[in-house]
Image 1: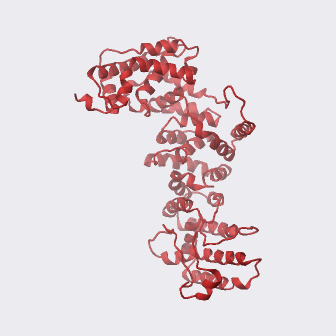
Image 2 (image 1 turned 180 degrees about the vertical axis):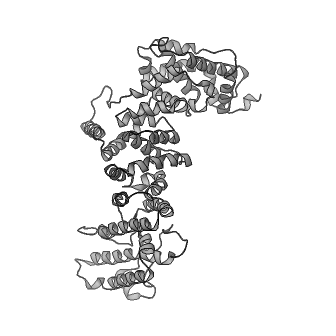
Image 3 (image 1 turned 45 degrees about the vertical axis):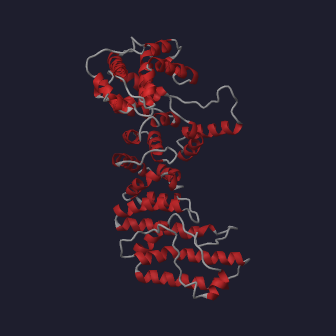
Length: 491
């Protein structure tokens, strides 16, 4: 009765534990028979129709597993059969040899049983150490991973010209280690890219019982898609451990991208994951061309990579000036981008906490120079500001005013901007909208300075959580200004 109240995950763990003790073995005969009928068992579990037949075979022999998955209680007989099936895995893994299983029939059966019994979870991550396969099987898994190749085809159909051209560009970028091109190409295919059962099971088994073999195997791969298929088989901790242990730039890129991208739907990174990620970023930061390309990938739109930000800030705290400038130059600047402002702030907050004052000032100066040259994107543009604007570098701009200027310099800057604001109407403008745009541009320039003046010498944060408008005048008392420009608004 106690087993009847257990969740499926608890039943599986209990059955695995009992399987390490001597007892009857439940051989998945129906599964083995179907796999033996395949011309290439490993290929078969990657093909839709054959894979369905294979999984239906084990489902027919162990139908109670699906019932348990739907919430049915486990009977004593069900538990004993599941335990016997796990004993078969232990025995098959311990006795496996290439001479006895040249077509990999038993190996594929191991993969299928593992995936079938723990749908949605890693079988190899939760098994006891007694489930460790022998070295010959682990060596076979290493060879399997090392031999992964990927091709992009549409079975039975001619791919659209645009799709074929996109694949060609991706493969060319991959061959040339063009990280920007790789990222652009990968974004087009990642939504429909899933690793097959064999890759998932082999990668997870090696990660658990022979992680160094996995590092060696993956580090020899030269296709980003092949590496991605392995990385997508692992949790973030395992993926980043793989990346930090590999000297391959492609492996470092793939493990970082999958672990921090908002497209990967990962859990927030834990402390161990962050340690591995920092190790990868520190290594890349010492390679100026690669770092600049990585920043164009990971820092063009920082909100796409929320889990990267704190670790990136920690690495920037110890990086050289070239790396700092590449970081600042990569950010795509916009008039608002509230979420991106917060992502950048998360990075720079970590940077500020760890960096020495001299390095912080260098970073803030780079940001201020970039911001002033950007000029809200109005230079030579037909667009106009119609509200007070903020931008992605706001945290750094406040840092510039707080740490690179003293109080007298801040007051002087404010006085200069106030004069500039008051004389906007004296300048020639093609139309009223252009005049209004310049007025809002000056008000926008004032915002980081006003915030800096209010937080200097305090522990207050350097970025507003909510849109906050700070003005050098009171709109309720300056009727003439309000009449000319309207009541100020903030984006």
